[in-house]
Each structure stands twice: as C-alpha cells, then as structure tokens.
Image (cartoon, rainbow, N blue to C red; front, side, top):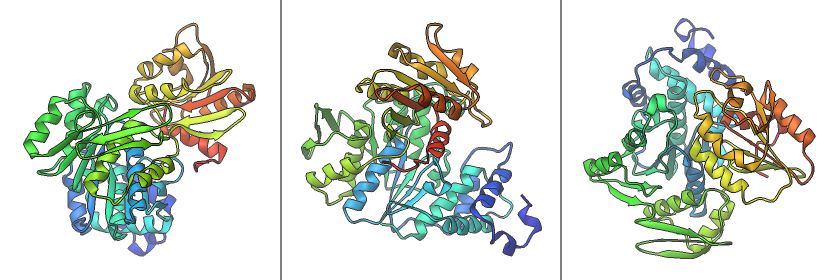
Amino acid sequence: MTNLSSIQASEYEAWSLNEWLDHLSALHPKNIEMGLERVATVFKQLNISFSKQTVVTVAGTNGKGTTCAFLEQACLAAGKKVGVYSSPHLIQYTERVRINGIDGSEQAHCRAFQAVERARGDIPLTYFEFGTLAGLKLVQDANVDIALLEVGLGGRLDAVNVVSPNIAVITSIDLDHQDWLGDTKELVAAEKAGIMRDNIPVVLGEPVKYQALLDAVSKHSALAFWQRVDFDYQLADDYMVWSNHQLSYAQLPIPHIPAQNVSTGLQVIQLLKLDLNEADLAKVITDTRLPGRCQYIGDSPAIMVDVAHNPHATGYLLSQIRKLDYDRLYLVVGMLKDKDIRSSLADFSNLNGHWMLGGLDVPRGATAADIKTVLGEQQKVLEFSTVCQAFEKAKALAHEQDLIVVFGSFFTVSDILKLSNKGNNE
C-alpha cells in the first residue's frame, strides 16, 4: 500500500474497505511503545465526545462479547438507541460496529478510516488502535443513547480505554495473553482494573476479590457490585433465578449464553435504569445469542462451533458438551501456538472423542503436530494441514446421531463459518 504522505487525499478517499484494511496492516509498527498517549492525541484531533451518551466499558478474559450482546438486546427492548464496538470479528470487519443491532456499512467504515487518517498525521497507530478510533467515531456519529464498548486486550492500555465510561464491567479474570497481561491472575486483574474511573459503578462478574481489584475500587472510590455478593443467580432444570439487594426475578428462562454473563448484565441493566419488567427480560434472555458461541450450524450430525481458546472458556464449552446426547464425538481443533493448549484441552481427554486437528494459516497459528504433542497417547487423533480439511473429514466420518464440535480460536471458527456459509445464527 502506498504511503499516504506521498499521495493526495482524493486518492485514498476512493479506497475500498479491503484496501483500507491492507493499509492498516501495512501501517502496523513492528516496534511500538504501548500506552494511550498516541491514541488519546488522535482521539482529541477527531473531536470525539461521549458526553451526551451513557458509556458502558466491558473488560474481562472471557464473556465480554456475550455480555455486550445481552446488554444490546436489553437496550433495544427498552427503546434505547444503542451502539456497540467489539472485536475481533468472525466473518466481516464491519461486525465490529453495530448500531441498533445492525452492522455498520463498508462505506461508513471507509469514511471513518479517512477521518482517522487525516487526524493522525505522522502519529503511528497499530491495526487495532486505528480500527478502534474509527469504531468510536462511528458510534459517536450515530448519536446513540448508550454506547457499549468492548475492550480488546486487558484494559489499562487498551485503545478503548481512551473513553471514560459511566459504568465499568469486568466479566471474568483468567490467564490469557500472558506475554502482555502477566502470568498471574492478580496481574491480569490489575490490567482489567484500569478501566475504572473515579466515583463510577463497577460491576464484577466473578466473586473472587483480587487485591488489585480491591485496591482499584478503593483508589477510585468506586461503587462496586460483586457477583455472588451484591447480586446472584441460581439455575434450576428449566429456569433461572436472579436477585440483588433491591429486587428478584424468580422465573427467567435458561439462557443460550453463559448464565454468569446474563447475571452480570442484569446488574448493569439495573444501573442503567432500563424500563424492563421480568417478562421483558425473559424475552431479552431468550433472544440473546452470539455467533461463534456454542452456535449450531448443522444437524444430522449436529455441528457446534465455539471460539473458546483458553482454559476458562474451554471449561464452559466442555460443560455444555456434557449436557448433550450423541453417539460419537468429533473434536475439530485449531489453535494459536501462544495459547495454553495443554490446559485448554486437558479435560477433553475423558470424552473419548475423535480428535481432528488442523493447522491455522496465520502468523501465530499452531500446526496439527503442535497440538498433538499435548494429547495423551491413548487419544484417537487425525492430523490435517488446515482446520477446513479436518472439518470436512469429520463430516465425512460422522453419522446422523454424532456430534461435531469445532473450537480453539476465532480464526478456527471464522474459517469454518466461511466454509459453511453460516455466518448468522440459525
């Protein structure tokens, strides 16, 4: 891609979305000092302001996307105009921005990219920083009532954190991205706590009171709401109960997304003061799904895809698999080599499944052989160059009563959804 400093603005104004994404990739610095100073400077140049909106920033190792999706449905049900910025995308880049549940257009993204390019001057930006600034501009320009901003990585130094929220949410704390966030949960918690601000509420989706979170709550005089302490939920066979110190709901449906994230979202809904009764919330819970999260894309045999890629997320996926009836199980797995592959897959060995391992054709992609090294000798394993080849073989072998589960990475699920042309929930 040509350097913009040597061409006229009129030339890049005609670029397609793919040309812009190529440009973002080419701009991405090989070595860059992490921090918000560069992003904040461009943010100011763009004149982005959320002073008229209620901003909810959502961080967490897992559960960010589903929590945002649940809150989005709740806002729509309450008649609020809502914008969501999230990452990464599964099929199309435009998935990263939704206004009232509808993806932003390619043309709108291109206009936002142009604005960021003009504003940044010679300031270097990473792919994510550039895209986040464009996403924030799109959400602001839509004049939404409520902006739901999903943190990409960590919190403290994430580009989303250039915006000060009215409500902070931390869905979960676990180990992932250890090279960036640290190799203990306390260190991870400290990074997530970076989204807190003075005197605003923070909703914590896990009951574990890490010292880093307690310190941040104290430092910011934040009003903290802890799962299992200030709000709580229980699951029965066919319904869910939720309560906090002010109210309770006795007959909510079992959600399609993790109940912990619904519970967290329900507390946020109370803080947003959305005008929703129990029947309204029941419909919101029923309607909330998110592509790539325990998503079924076929039956006879049943085919489920899930982006789970760390021990916390694969543990939840495993709990869902154990609830299902099937004859044989085929596990189609592709992962990134910098993930904790061993811990992520360890508990699946008891399922007596057929492992169909595929490589990922991305810079950090693990090969099938890389993944196989962590599986026990007793496991039934087939290796393939790509996850698509592994998936096609699983489909060829599976009978009507069998189950195929595809997981391990956003890249893995994206490849299979593209192959199956099933990017939307059925």
